[in-house]
Image (cartoon, rainbow over all chains, first blue to last red; front, side, top):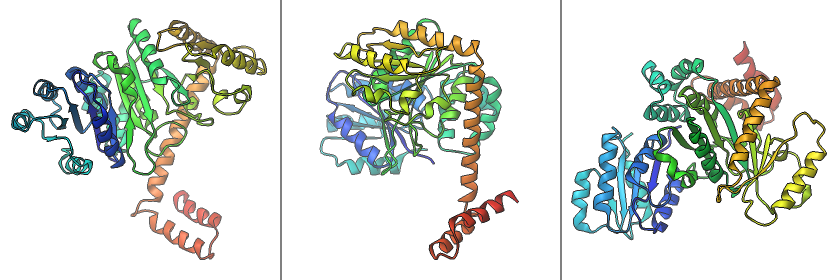
Length: 130
Length: 312
């Protein structure tokens, strides 16, 4: 039986993983298989993990402010490795004005603080590409 | 599909990952590819790592993988975590301890949920071992879910089984219980930086004193994955065990047992699919269940009827 596989990853140097863990747990409870990699991941590590785990979704969480670099690095590298059928979503402290540029770079949706987890589950189920 | 099998045999990571997804989802498209790769298998050394939860299996596997990489060997890792019986979802968190391996081309790690399989393993495990073997991995490390006392199915698939314990798990009676304690080819007492390690080793030794066969006494290795201690000794004990298997005929016997278990599993899956397929036996099965509930039929005669339709 097909299950949605999601990589939840924290790029960069901030150590705030509560949000990522809560989202991981919610996706698990929604019947998805969630690969959780822990803190301080480089774009290379995230993309290699996405390839080996053959995930349908990559969820990035970042609270340090480096999202314009790190989210986009991951998106570019995924595309380079021909993983362009993977849905990329982001979360954390992301200013509203950065969102259009992130969307343009391939981050399909950005979920800010206070987003009900059910919204994230629904979004993924609706938009997963394969 | 021939394309995919070729790429898997060439070791292409994306293709290995795709094929694993196909077998996990039980997709019929995987069968032809699996048929093609079998003749390329049989070279990988399969090491099972099992033990209670929190015993440090992931960290130990990370250290073992580093040691095998230093020898120039390619390493495949299958890390299994439990699937929720309620939601069907799973949180696969074993990679947290293996981050540094994820950018090494000579390592392929796959996290898997148990997906309803009992025994600490996952249904597609035989297939995944075949895939990683065909893809040229020299060593395949399998991490079971954190097990209790009788989840021992790993022995059906591993050449060498490590049972990982930690100090302070219980008294000496625990070590003479059946199940997990009987399947070790090597006992690993991990977290040996913690107090109580001498006592745990002594209890294991006295348990082994009671065991009859003396041609190969199960080694006990104290490790501390955290402090990178004891890993060299452990890999040398694994090598010794492999040599012991190959000198005796035990290696052939174990491989035959694996193929037997794999074959039975494939047949079981196909039978179940056949029995519960709407277009095949599902209606007969449903009407049998109705009759059993009404006491018009007993379950054994119902089974005879159903099997009769398959075996005629």
